[in-house]
Length: 131
Image (tube, helix red, strand yellow):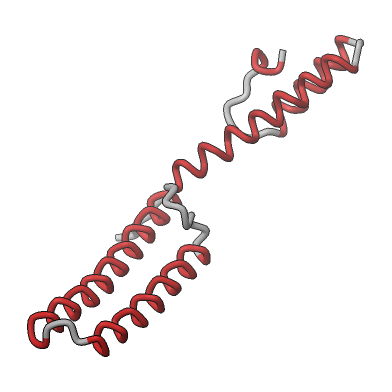
């Protein structure tokens, strides 16, 4: 049976979940070692320093992986990043339309520009948005 590929959004979400699960497991190992060290030896400074170094390496690796996948380091979700990008694009288009309305007195020329914007801009712009 031939199975269709999942939509790209689904595969990105799955990849992000898998990455987060791997990171969670790595931190679980670090915490387990810390707990084990404290239980057996009390606060052994050498072991704790080694765990600090491992933790720093793990944190840098995670940041690198997130950057390589285009994910945010400040905790923003992909949805928040996309929404912000869409809002920024919308603001740019609104500014452009305002300038066209102010600088081009010919209404037919403004309409042609508006239609060209609608044809070229992805998203949910409608003619009422540019008029």
